[in-house]
Image (cartoon, rainbow, N blue to C red; front, top):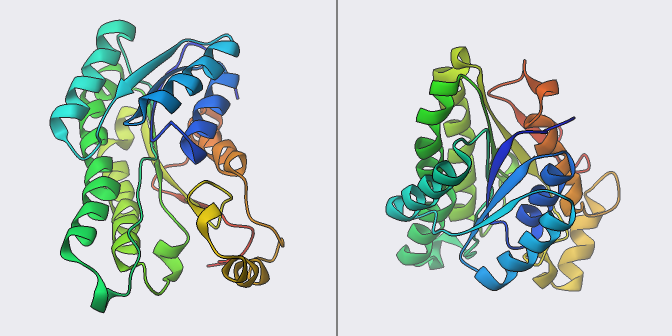
Amino acid sequence: MSLNGRIAVVTGAAQGIGRACALVLAEAGADVALADLNMERLGAVAKEVEALGRKAMVLNLDVSSPESVKAGISKVLEVWEKVDILVNNAGVVRDNLLMRMKAEDWDAVLRINLDGTYHCTKEVLPGMVRQRYGRIVNLASVVAQAGNAGQANYIASKAGVIGLTKAVASEVARRNITVNAVAPGFIATPMTDKLPNDAREKLLAIIPIGRMGTDRDVAYAVRFLASEESAYITGHVLNVNGGMYMA
């Protein structure tokens, strides 16, 4: 799955799945623009990318702000002249039962997870259309398909990402641009590390493979959808969940 000569943008790249995606794409030969608000961690990831022999660019980028996204993508285009691959990974959780959920927590999750995917996709599409090539990979979630109590805002945002994926895929397919989603299950990341042990054990009991996934399990799926090998796949949701949701 060679990505030599490709330019990738990964949002939420400072840690977890975003960091793994950036490194796996770099290992395949891509130069990577790393977008996040945590500049200290982002700098460390940039050094890891460069240690693999690839170029890295750090972008102090807030995906919920169209102005910030425009400035970040403009910088990539100014320096590297194109964007071939976009990985929309940036996301947050603000869990609570709907009856107790504050409006600001609902808005924040939708603004970052769904609106952020929209802003970044819209900003890279004109260049991809002109060059008649692009790979957009959006991070969804198993709970967007299966549901989960206490995550109405997160699930709504990720279900929206799936719908957005399919809509945009149908709009740009004839321009040699594919748009797909990866739906991780329960992945061992800093976000899931906060789960209590009893909750973790209950989760493991419903995963047929019997373990939580790793960030690289997800990143390898992203790499496939960013590669030439996936050229005839678009509008698809690739489940990476150890078999916990089969539908």
